[in-house]
Image 1 (spheres, rainbow, N blue to C red):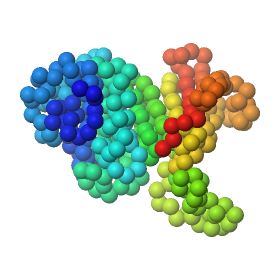
Image 2 (image 1 turned 45 degrees about the vertical axis):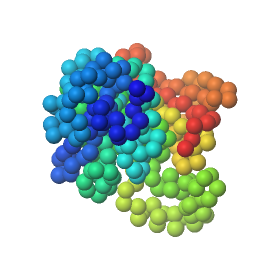
Image 3 (image 1 turned 180 degrees about the vertical axis):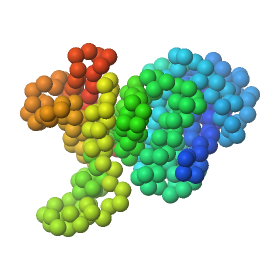
Length: 320
């Protein structure tokens, strides 16, 4: 068995699909993906059990293997714009997320409202509600403590992840084992002004020479996804945040400079007085990886247990 490949694997119950109600009346379609090593140990029970969409997720073998294991780790994955949890390379991502501990790392993911088998229509507020609902299910129903949960987002999912992590930090003083943002963007209006097709055809960048048109554009976007502001607020409300930003310089959809800007935003938020770029550059740890890329690290506080750790990994290859 080679791991998670497609939705048909749910026939063997490595993938357990289930429904998740939101507080505003939508019904989300979610996946719980078992780690392949754990699946192998319990393959006979899983193969001979009920298949397909679970009527009650808490009665499934998959749920029992997750909630009853004190060593279980959970990655809650929020995918990018459009498509479904089963689309394209997303299933390869789930395999990669679980590969470092094949018997312990479970993956939980969901179709946003209006996508796939989930009901409703997508809005910024709605997608954030979907993310909060999924994380609350993991904590309250599956009983996985936050220190065993990593929030992982790609592209649009980075905006959802940041909003979700901020919500739990501000409202409940809950911090997670890690927040990983792959190909993040600072906010949607800025992204649209820097977006190009295949790195050749700019979409809205010509508006930069027309400030009034640019301002009009900013004012008429209903969903702005202010990730930079949310990330700064998350840092200010955290004491042991473990934040990782990953981006490729050959990402032609979302320029890597967005992640760099978020790194400086997060580092700056660790200081009450605020810092300049030069001040941050003078303190941060920089490691040149040659042709691979580079890593910048920032740490606040005097101890590992009570410090916010911020890391950006900029790779020269790996863009979409």
